[in-house]
Length: 159
Image (cartoon, rainbow, N blue to C red; front, side, top):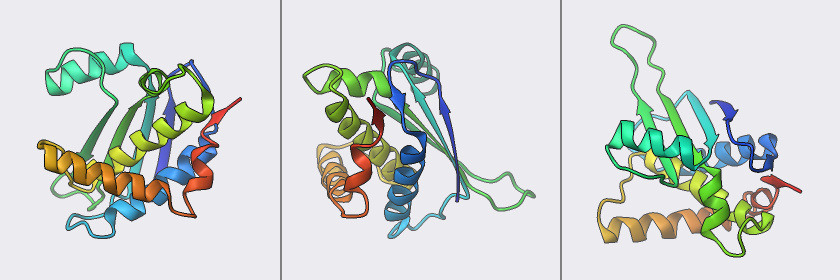
């Protein structure tokens, strides 16, 4: 699985190697029990509230920023069977969602949760109901506590 990262935000210095490794591990966990095929390519876009508001309106018809958007692009008929996933993560929202504002450790943990949530959506899971949201959050928090993932969480933001 190839992972491309576009860091389109300027709020934080991010460790893109840690983002890539964390995404790989989270996507592998998300796809383990998924009935849909694992993507051959994952694009991570790291952005801010302004850009996320535009994307949220354009793709979901909702005004204002959101934390994460995930898109699964199925192969075009007649093309090689390669599924692509794009996960757009709002780094600015991760910074302000957890007080104290812009604390690197708290922002890093929130950012990791957003990546986990995007991977969970990419595996076909939904959070349309309160029960689905609760199930997704439990699963994502469990993933972030794993011994092969937890050390990466605090490495996302460079100080």
